[in-house]
Image 1 (tube, rainbow, N blue to C red):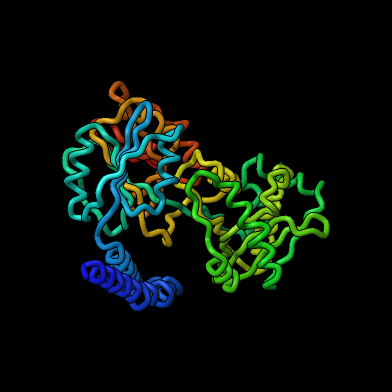
Image 2 (cartoon, one colour):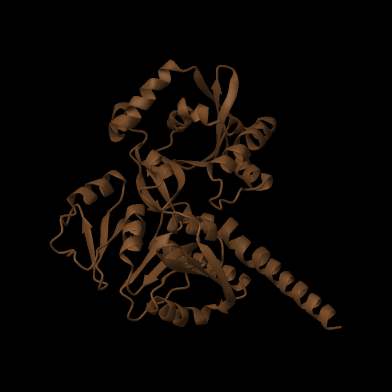
Length: 408
C-alpha cells in the first residue's frame, strides 16, 4: 500500500514538472523571450524581457523541487564542496583538481538551507562552489572571497562587413598565418539544408568528435533531435577535402548575426585538425556569413577561462567576450581563506567573472601581495587581447578592485 502511494506521488510530481515545462517554461523560452530579444530595445521592452527571463528561471527552480546536491571533493592539496543541481559537476571537478579527487556525497538540502551551509563550510576552510539558477542569489556575510563565474561565455567577432583587410587586421598574427596556409590545402565548403548530409554530419562527425574532444570532462552530448532542430532553423556548413566531406558546423543566421552551434570532424580524426581543418571551417563560415550580409559572427560557447584551449583558439580571431544569455545557471565561489596552492591554481585557470554585464578576469592576491601597489599591466594587456573589459583583483581580506584600460 505504502509503495503504491509513493509511486503515485512520484508520478504526480513528474506530471507537475512536465506541466511546468510545457505550459510555463517552454512558451516563455520558445515564443515570448525570442520576440522580446528581437527588434529595437526600448526601456519597456528590456524590462519586460528581464521579467520574462526571471519567470522562466523561477519555473526551472520549481522543477528542481527546491533541493540541491551536496558533494565534497578531497584532493592531495585542497578540498572543495559542491552545492548545486549537478548540471556541470564533472566539468567543475576536472577544472578544480589536476588529479581525480576522492568524493563524499551528502543528503540533498533545500535552497533556503544553502546560505548557512556555505558560511559553515567556508569557515571551516573549504572552497565552496555553488551551481544554482542565476535568480538564486544572496550576499554571504564575513567571507573574504566571493565571485560569480558564468558557466559559459560567448565570443563574438564584430563588424565582419568591414573591408576584409580590416577584419584580418583584428586577428592576431598566428591566425593570419594559419589562414594563409589554407591555400596549400584542397579545402572547400558548401552550405546545405539536406537531411542526408545532416545525418552524415551527426553520426560520422559530431558524435565521434565531441566524445574524443571532451572525454572524461563530463560534457553532455546533444541527442539527434536537439541538433536536428537547430539544423532546421539554419543549416550546415560542410568542409570538403577534395570531394570528401571532412568537417562541419550547424549554424543559424538571425538578423545581422551568424551563430556557430555544433561542430564535428570526420570520425573524430585529429590529424585533420592538425592540418588546419578547424581553421578552414571558421574561415569559410566567416566568408559565408559575409556573403549573407551578416555584421556579427558568434563563435559560440566557451568555458569562462582565458586559459582554456577552445577560448584561446577563438580569441585569436579578434573576438570580444559577452555573457551567454542562454545559460541559466552560474558558479558562485565562496571562501574564507584560500590555501596558497589552491589560490595559485585558480589564478592559473584565468577565470572570467562578470560585473554590470561586462566580463573581467579574476586575480586573487595572497597575504604578502598588495593590489594597490602591484603592477598588473601584463595581465591587463592580455585581458584586452582576450576581448575582456579588464581585471577584477580580489585581495585576501575581500577588497575588490576593477582595473580596465581606461582606469590604468
